[in-house]
Length: 259
Image 1: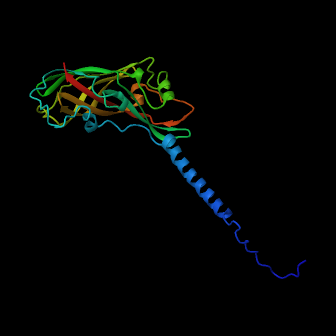
Image 2 (image 1 turned 90 degrees about the vertical axis):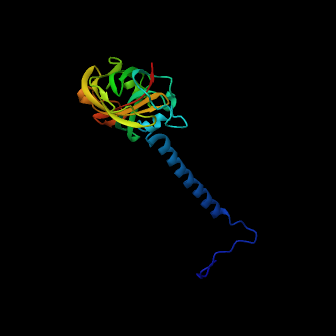
Image 3 (image 1 turned 180 degrees about the horizontal axis):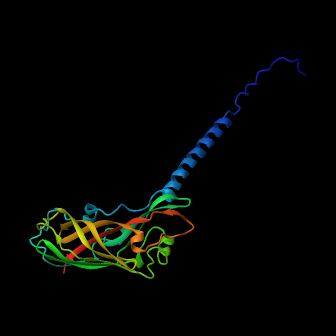
């Protein structure tokens, strides 16, 4: 029976536990931490852009770089040089390859750089003094690989249509003048003017290249902007692809050794 007077909470009996509320605070804190870690994991494995960096002459040169970068200073580069598939490894993209880079947006993923590369590249380059007089490169696009198997499968019948047009070729039509024979370790910027055959269409192009003579190997990297419409390429469609740009880049990384 009460008389209406206010009462104070009964203090816990001596020895009674007061850890209940604290335990819930700890559990809540752990749960929050797990949510943060889970969010980071989702970003890392799903939303982050997994495309490798674009080709770079300095990075490519590491595949053949001696302890002294001036080793192998060229007395003469004259002769026939061929693309050497034994340099580096395709597993870490330290070998020769040809590939593409395109900006796309995927459902549930967001904006990413789509890429694909193939190590199946062959070709020759003929040099006379300080002039490249002949260059012919072939790439098997049917073996393009990316980090998305569904993308690789799509390219067989869409976009590049590699089932119908498996090979891309470049043929030099104007000599490349180096000016002088490059010394070992020196990076030379040059333009390669020729014809590019892609998706069954041949067009005149000029590819800006970086070249370097290192340890008796000529290292070449380059990026060329490609408008899909110029080569009759239709943008691929797939349930995961929300949008894709109507242009991309062709990239190449080549290692030439003297024949």
